[in-house]
Length: 201
Ligand SMILES: [Zn+2]
Image 1: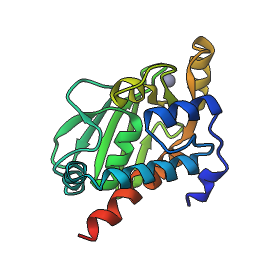
Image 2 (image 1 turned 180 degrees about the horizontal axis):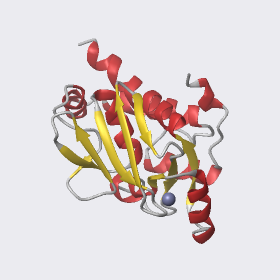
Image 3 (image 1 turned 135 degrees about the vertical axis):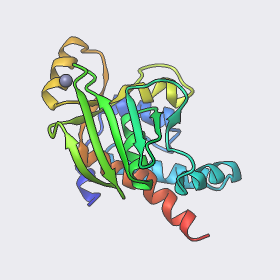
Image 4 (image 1 turned 60 degrees about the horizontal axis):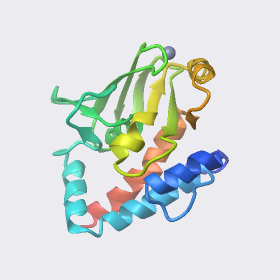
């Protein structure tokens, strides 16, 4: 399925920032390449014992991918009613590969609620069905993803709302992904990096 990502070009200015912030080995030119480069980096991270232990806890459901201790637009509800905030829309979707979740977020343009239910990396329901994800990044600065990348990755209730928001914010850096493209990126970049490594031990 991820070959569909291969045709989707990443604008050079966005790709340049993703390389710096995600510490990739090269500038991703397509979403497929971005997935491959993320996977490469995470596999490398998994060689460090502390990072491996962290992902192992996520794999076992003891930790939540992208969990942060401050309020964000993205709340993830786990099956046991526990609710946590995650740093960005993509993090929320990645967690949906590890355990069944309900994501409560809001359109970045009009604040209309966005709700996604998923389990095993498959979306069971989505409201509104027109919802898309804006994959953006800060234009300058380097450091914590929570500061320079995550706040720029958000749900929008529709592609039209991205267009309206961009008309008012013409200098924002980024691109629109469909929910399926974002899921494939989560699968390729994160899930396929983590799962084989942790199930073999
Ligand atoms: Zn909206």
